[in-house]
Image 1 (cartoon, rainbow, N blue to C red):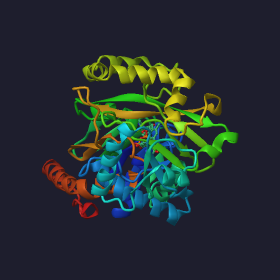
Image 2 (spheres, rainbow, N blue to C red):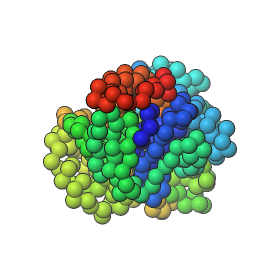
Image 3 (tube, rainbow, N blue to C red):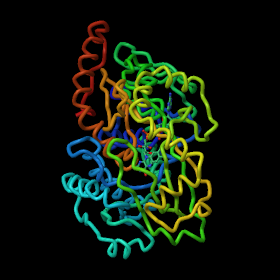
Image 4 (tube, rainbow, N blue to C red):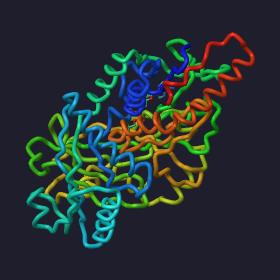
Length: 426
Ligand SMILES: Cc1cc2nc3c(=O)[nH]c(=O)nc-3n(C[C@H](O)[C@H](O)[C@H](O)COP(=O)(O)OP(=O)(O)OC[C@H]3O[C@@H](n4cnc5c(N)ncnc54)[C@H](O)[C@@H]3O)c2cc1C
């Protein structure tokens, strides 16, 4: 084990971006990413909508707002520098009815407070110049949003981590975490790994990994599956770029929308259905441990009691292409059920408080020489480089102190200890 060594648990985009930022900020630090699958980006990162979100929706001053606004710029720069396919095509948020107009105006105001430039309210005619088949009474034009290939971003991050001397170990499921005198030891299916610091970026399993490190789990990950349809090729002319609804502020998800994909094609979705397995990509997937975990969590029951109609509606829409299509018709009235072919799905790692409220902001929990990312849903992929930067820059100050304390206590018991080199953490 070397001084200033780091373990990052989870090879999704947040873990990889964090590892990359460590190698950038602290050249010479030893960084190891531990990923349980045989490749990186196999869960949320590999099943998302591929949208670059600019921070429109999030409460001013929140971590989400701050990190999405800086994150999208950084992600676009990263893509430009590394030749990763992306396109800043802009999006429309469409008010389907006059009742939605106040919420659309609030969204406009919120975006301005978050520092977004170029937002513009459009009437029906201007809106249809941009999206000729959009319905609704008005729209907010968001020019800075776009689409990207997040899988390629992950592959590029891996090459950069490796080029900087780090490693990404796949098929390495972390089963146990142990605190040694001045380090952490991760026992994995690929052997044991030891480092001074570790960062938990385990996505759908982040609460369980935090528990392995002795953190109690007041908040719990509740999996919400998002299902997509693909628009049949002969009807793809109905959507040019990105068409979103005005979101319901009570709910953490954005509502089903239309997305142009960076490699071609148009997707519609995702919905948000409670899943019976954290990695349950099909309706029939059930994992007994995950189910037990969810059903024994009071927070989930309180959530169900708080939003029974919404949960029921999501479930019905999941089983009915007609109902799904009806939601889409609010945005593009010409779309018909027969235009929709089954698409893929993704599962969101949504953290929930015991009160039944979903955790709205990104959520980080510190521990001596460790940090847990316990809520990084949308716009987590867009913001991943900014999240990594945040972890490395801001948290490292606290770790430095803790590392020095740990080293000093270690020196007390081992007089011949080598000097602690904290320079890589400054
Ligand atoms: C349906 C859907 C649509 C979305 N759309 C967008 C979008 O358009 N734009 C956007 O910015 N964001 C979007 N998001 C959110 C975005 O995908 C996530 O914020 C982001 O991918 C989170 O990355 P992550 O690395 O935290 O998690 P993940 O990608 O889930 O990675 C976590 C990794 O940890 C590994 N792991 C777990 N447990 C262990 C263990 N014990 N040992 C070792 N490894 C472990 C997993 O195998 C996994 O690879 C969407 C998400 C979903 C689900």
